[in-house]
Image 1 (tube, rainbow, N blue to C red):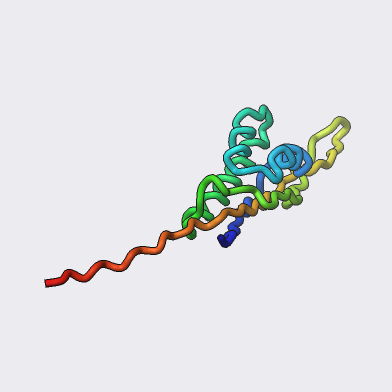
Image 2: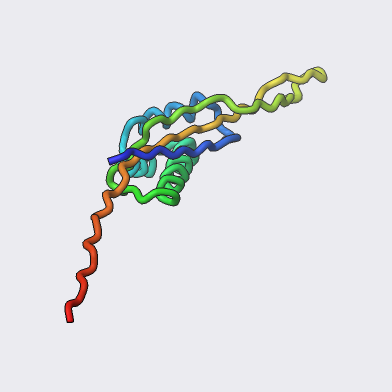
Amino acid sequence: MATVEKRAYIKGVELAPRKVSIVASLVRGRSVADALVILDHTPRRAALPVKKAIESAKANLLDTNSVDVKTIAIKTISVTTGTRMRRYKPASRGRALPFEKKSSNILVVVTGEEKVKKAEKPAKKEEK
């Protein structure tokens, strides 16, 4: 059986990469079905974007290949820093205190085994 890989890359998630990577490490290396159950019961805000990224990668895999659903697993899941928006908060005495709004990018690669197609028997010729 051949293994097939597909990926999903979610950019611009408005959460700090450190917070998202904590959630991503919960499901790294697991099957997709297990990962989705874990993320449904994870009480963190970052669980929703990670879940959406995994579902997107799974949909990409199922859309283009005939894959056995039970064999789909997460090969890699990585969180990188996205763009940062520099902002300022007003402070006393006319000052402005800078801060950054951080974002993150999520890359999910899933693998699965292709279904084995059964060889069709040739049609019997009718004898007269």
